[in-house]
Image: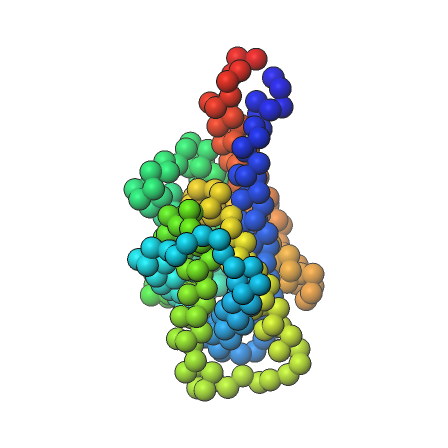
Length: 301
């Protein structure tokens, strides 16, 4: 069978989209390290980070004006509201329950993205998607020490709600695939920054050069550049594929912490992370090979 039958020319767009989401997850994963190093109130971090991200995205927009026309206002604000709620509820859940519970429950997002994408977009999840969901759930349980422990029920429920919002966010942005999804992300960061303004006065941050540089990196790269990558990638892959690829974030998070602080991940974490990465990679390859076979004119070669 020729290579073109396995990976047709048009499939390149998919792999670019997957790559953009993966790079986005790479930037997202650095948040755990910087939040660990910054001794500020989480809402202050979230607000200032979003403010810097908003300014960065506006600068990029001014330098490279979007070619697409204006967005459907409902989708724009639905996407913005869902992502704002994702950020705020995840920060709050981290304060109310254990960090492991918070991120495990937030990353039920691929399930919600799969169901909502099926209902609203007609993007029916394939068997490889559901298989990857089962394996990533097992990997997450292994990664974070065997499952849910400690914390409050209210915090756990809030983390689940954060996952629903995260999944819905990917679907709303996917619905804007013919437009400019970054408008919705820009609005989300503006809303988050506006909401968190009071916390800056209630919990004044201790200013220093390292803290300022950390916030600059988080705003520009970890949120700003990541938002641009996600908005570009979601136009090229389905909502559930985007959420599955984003599972690289919790896997990479402890790697950064280890690289800087020397805090070693456990063997369970390494094995769990390997399962997640393998499941997501296999899902992507199987899906595109099946699509290639179905669309190839010389299927029998």
